[in-house]
Amino acid sequence: INLCPLRVQFQSAGKNWLFDAEKNHCLEFDALVGSDGVRSPDGKKTAFVRDHNIWIRDDLINKEQALTHNGVVDNTYGSAPWSAKVQVLWSPDSQQIFTHQLDLRQVTTRALMDHVPHDAPFGAQRVRPKLLEQKMAYPGDKQVEAYRLSAIDVNTGEMQMADYDPLPFFCMGEGFFSEEKLGWWANDGRRVFFVDVVRGANTVRVVEFDTQTGATRVLFEESSDTFVKISHSSLEFPLFMPLPDSDELIWLSERTGWAHLYLYDLNSGQLKQVLTEGAWLVRNILQV
Image 1 (cartoon, rainbow, N blue to C red):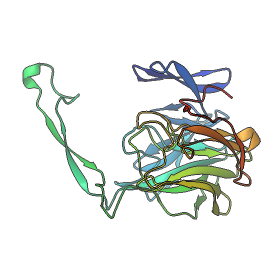
Image 2: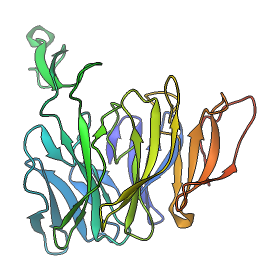
Image 3: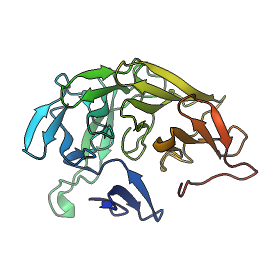
Image 4: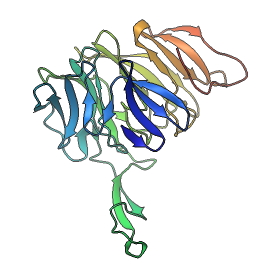
């Protein structure tokens, strides 16, 4: 699937990959993401968004059904402000999806100018700028874009909301569950984990969510007088790596003044090992 001139998604060796030509490396994904939705790990179903709600299509019999029903304009399921990619994450057993509802209803509207619209008629003389509107909070606004996290059983349609405050939208990337990958499943198919970046980014938390009960617990958090970085720039993916096979997480931190990697136990939330240290910084995790 062509995403842009510098990124391509593909399947190989039974896994899904994103090749970034600019960085010259591949990242593994849990599911291949395309405009048509996100396919389940067993390849039998596809989750997609229609009319602001999440739908499931049984690809074996080509039958569709809505999983959510209360999605409306500016309060949509499985959508991201700056991306057309469907924001759902399948459980390893293909029985549940981890997703969010993005609430923009109370967010102020900004006026934007599209100086060269893509749908303009051919010919430079006929191209005219187009005025657009975008819901986007300003610094200091009381109401901001907010994610409400939930897990949905794809067979029964039963939804379990996370017992956790809505998360503020904090970056203009490809979405919570795509390249940013701020949420992921444990191999047991019951627990999910997510990263909560507090507004202003001076505190970041790693949280466990029990999809059967809705219970959540903060496993660990980092705070700073300025801000906590989980990537080196807004143009890069967050630099941490879940290890579901061992219930561990490789975490990036500047707690010593340098960006280094730390290994955490996702059962206890305890630090297990300092992986790198010294007067230099880690730029990327290449392979585990």
